[in-house]
Length: 420
Image 1: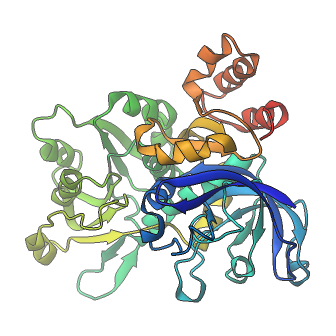
Image 2 (image 1 turned 60 degrees about the horizontal axis):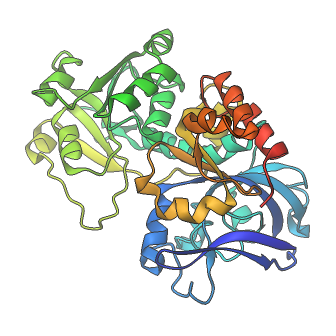
Image 3 (image 1 turned 90 degrees about the vertical axis):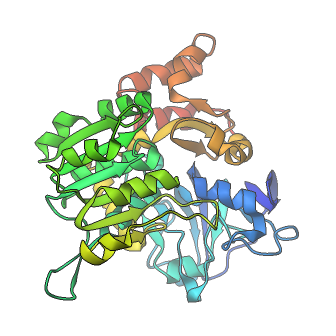
C-alpha cells in the first residue's frame, strides 16, 4: 500500500513524499492516520536532526516520519494481535514506548510510523509495551490531543509533598491547596487550567499568569471563573506585565503563605526564578516547559530548600496510564481540550508549519493528514469565508461552538476538504 508522509532527512530537512509500505508481518498492524497535532517537540527534533536523543544517526539514508500526537483507524491486524485489535477500531498511541531502555518513539525514530502520514505500519513493540490505545470518542482530534493532555496529567501526578516528621512523600498536587500556573495561557497551559478545575483531585486556588492580555481574555472566556467556582476552585487570571511587585501580588492571593504547587509553562529564566520565590512551605515547583538550550539554567534558593522544604520536579511527557486517564476524561466529557487548537491544516502544510512553529502565534496546529489544506487560524475562517464557501461554513460551525474546534467541524472537513 502506498502512503504519503512527511519525512525527516536531516536538520530542517522535511519532505512530503509518497512511497510504498511493506506488507505487515504477524506482529504488526496497518493503520490509517486521520489527525495529528504539531508539537513543539517536533520542531525541536526537526531543528536538531540526528543530534536529538530520539532521532537515529542514519536519517539521511533512512528518513523517519515525524509527528507523535496522532489518531486514526486500524486497517489490518497481524495474526499475533487479532484477539486484541480489530479493523475499524479507532486508536491513539503513547509515543514514549520505553522499549528495552531506548528512547525510540513514533514520530522521531521510525521509518514506517509517525503521525504525519496517511498510512503507517505500527511495529510490534508498540503493542508489546501496551502503547496502542483504543479510542472510542466521536472526534479524531480529541484522540490526537490525548498525548498533550497526558503530559499535563503526568505533571500533576509527578508533583510531590513531604510528610512532616517522616521521610514519606505524598505524590500529586495538594488537594484543596494553592496552585500557580505561570506563563499559563499557551496551549499546554490551557490544558492545565482545564485539568486543574475539572479533574477529581483539584486545588482550592488557581492563579494563572501571563503578559498577553488577549490570550488571558481568551482563556478566561473558555475556562471561566464561574465554572471553576462551581467545581470548588477559586480561579484568577493575572497579567503580570505592569505589576510593580509581581511576587508580592501573587503571594497576596495565598494570604501570604505562598503556593503549594507552581507550574512553569515557559522555559524563561525569570519565570522559573519567580516560581521559586512564590513557593510556600513544602512547595513543589514543576518545570513543565522543555527548553531547547541544553545548558538552560536558573537560580534556586537552597536556603528555602533546607529550611522550607522547597523542591523541584520536571516532567517530559506522560505515561500510558496518563494517556488512558486523558482518553477517559475526554470520553466522559469531564475535560474538553478543544481550546488548545487554534489552527487547522492538511498534510501539505506540515513541513512548513513544523519548521516555523515558534513564529506562528496561537495554540495547537491540528493537521488532517488525508487532506490538502493550508494552515489557517480558526479566527480567520470568517474572513476567508467572504470568498470561499468552505471556510464560510467552517466559520458558522465554529461560531456555534464558542469559536472552538469541534466534532461537527471535523466531520465537515473530512467530508468536504480536498484529498492530499
